[in-house]
Length: 350
Length: 290
Image (cartoon, rainbow over all chains, first blue to last red; front, top):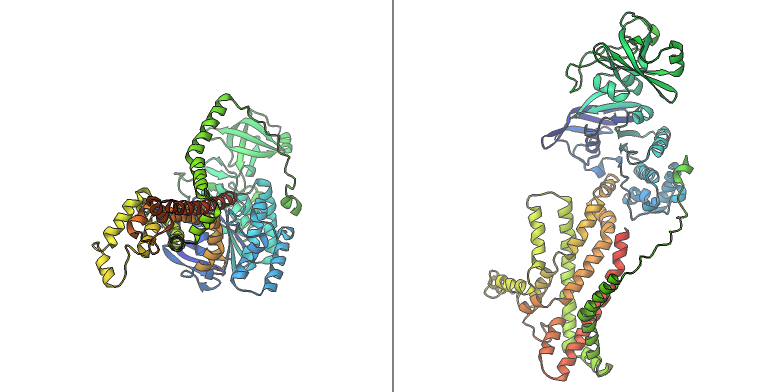
């Protein structure tokens, strides 16, 4: 294992940022630490890098106990949300920094810097200062700088958090492709579930200082361990006391097993999809995500009474919907009547 | 993808012609008052020093500048100011790092105490030094027995100068350090840099303009210090007389020669001050740019 975290606790005053964290990060993988702000994911990343110290617990990097090593001896590359570019050095000198510290021969440094600048598509900006680069360029420079010293692991703290949506999307794809080329064990922090689902091989969901679930994206999406993971990874709606994805609900014209009677209150068209809002007898207001074709086929309209039935993954709603739910999870069709809608069986990764 | 990511705005849009605000009569009056004020307070005195200095031509001035007393005063001034600035620079950078990078009890008190010496009168600073290090002071007798004389000697003058310019470097460096934050240093650390390498390669270049500005300010203050140095120096011509003391003592004497000495030395002090102001003005915009 490239990174192993054992029983790590960290508190800031009364606030417990991390509680009994145990984690083993897949070597060579691209792993996302996903969770809401203040959930402890950045703290965990900084503790792995040595920029913060755990109150208790151990950190192993590449099979070595690194808990008491200073950051400069841990062989980690760290990329900050706000780039942390060395403002007084050119792009090339920024990338060369770690190699110069290691007193590598000049020719070797130049060769390696050229290679890395090509890798991050910055070769024509070698002599620019960071202030002359855009945010996306600065972040790619920071990545090249971290990779220059060939670290055992690469840690990225919300690497695209400070960029605008378009650039963020491009860099996301680019990071995926870069990782396929470089294969360094990478752990990145994000609060954007779309980013995690799209880029990562494996996702670690962290909330309230605890790990909620670890697994490949499809597994987390299809078989969330609890209410929190379910609602954090994608849209959810409540239907008859369970959480279900709005696209996993079928609309029926009559009462069948496991269905709930509702009145359609609104059909709201958003681009190619239709959001059907409804009201149930118990006062809950589930909504269903449909396509226009489905709406035409069903011939539904506002004010009509229909029956809704949950397909696919459902998670029971905890009685107190505050803390993370720890109930047993029902995977599979809630009504067990639609085999084609059943989710992937345990262990399968889509 | 590269193209969309790497495109730079190479041509800045032409700046729109700035509309000049019409100058009202009030503005003219205000300008006139400001001008008169500066003229009366700064320009006239400076001009009169220059005029008095060169009233009899260049020759007598050069004679003064070659006299042993003047040269001794100049040498002593440079020595005292040089040591004081060096000490203040080391202290200022170290203390700035301590104050911005660490949280410890008494931090704010310490920060306030550092400002104290420049807030109280230099004469009081001088007297306080005598009370501590003088012959009848707390440490004076012990130091004298050990062979160190502080008061009425160069160490006392350096101490006085250090005190009156204590926080100047510190106060320039602290905001720059705070603005730069810790991330660049942490990035350097994760790239393998040890404490000294981080300071040399990251911290120092980050604060260089603020540091230069602080040094220039300290130097100006140190060269011009009079009150505190006067109290602790004894002001013996040729041995413990700095340029400011030389100006004062010469001016107190009677006779055209003494007056000329005073003006010539005053002119030298002023010339140094003006060149420092030029250096400071040249540094200031650089600092704001970065």
